[in-house]
Image (cartoon, rainbow, N blue to C red; front, side):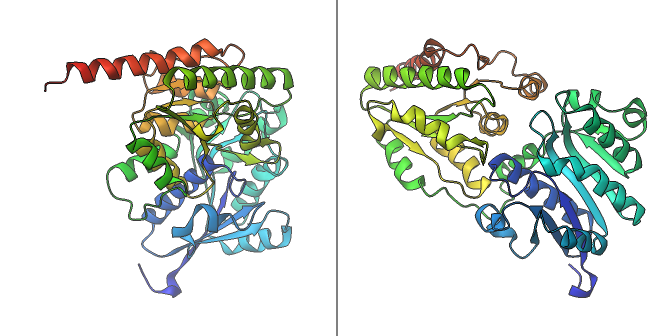
Length: 372
């Protein structure tokens, strides 16, 4: 790196500081890619609702990331003026769940171009469930940008033809290359979840560790009630069947105000006969979460998009519960069409029990066939 006098500043806009493990993994890859593109030290300015998010999710990046309160418009503009590069992404910023501040992102990127900044849309998600106005202004801002990549086919199809032909490329979700970076042994910061030692002890006792990611379906209390009931019944059935030989490790990927996975998971745990067989993983660095899935779980049941990516990349048997088209597209893109998948409206106790039962039977057959 060059001296401090040669520092470059980069303004990064995405779903960061919103207590979402998957999104925070994306930020790590954004910082890695931008840093690798310049031979100087980069300072990253990141608007966020929770300005303490760097200490929770990015301890290794404390000297590189400066969080900005998303409501501090004056500071956002002054930081924008200071920066040479503006990165929008990655992740699904525009969908049926678009946050209030995401509506203004296209205007910030256009302002950046007027200020002669380099503007890059990096592995974004733009979905058919986004409003017509959002899709229009996102496409308009991409038209004026320097580079654009999208993470799935649906997002690509949402782009104007001129953007598809002259600007945009298809790419992986940014969590994929970062996980490969971890698996290749290149990451030097390798934290563990707080619960690592306790769960590792459970695993050492020969128990089957089932990783689970659940999320509430927005504006559908009846479906949420059904999901809780089916999972509660399934986990109680499995606990009775395997007695002391099973443990459920819950990963609440999102803790946003209106989509708190942990509260939803707690509803399931409250219905369990043996609550000591369940552990909820605390929010911390996403690297620690990926390592926990890879090193501690035997198989995984996932609803959250990034829980499915994490578990597939960790090479775990996965039962996917795709709540949006982007999950289905990931399964297709990565040749996972033969893996079990059940939509939230169709998930049942038998789906969950049968998935784990099949895994257990295959494992027992391998042990019996192993040479003495």
